[in-house]
Length: 143
Image (tube, rainbow, N blue to C red; front, side, top):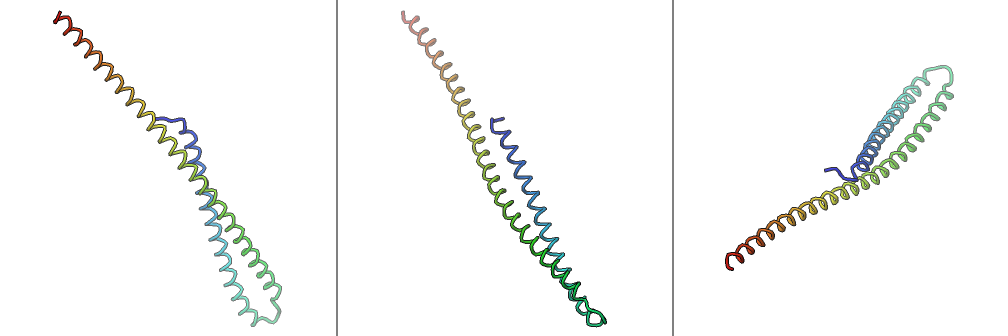
């Protein structure tokens, strides 16, 4: 049964679905950044080992690598904050979705009760009409 809440419910479900996709993308981005950070740490270790064998200084590269590590760490923190915000939005959107679903269910239940009450009233009217006809017939026979 269609309800006046169906459109709002579909829109809210789309919002929840969109947020799920965004949350998944944020989680993937965090994982990617963490992978980049691990790779950079491993590369720094390798470069330090190789730097001892080289006759020239590699301090400039290490400084650049440290800046890259700092940038990646900041990006991870920012992405985690974004993820936290997205999760909060998803929680609110899901709560709204559940509230709309509840309203739609109450609407359906009320409509069902009204239909059942109308059906019962029609049955009662038929029974009362039959009773009055029978009563009239009995009065006519008695007279």
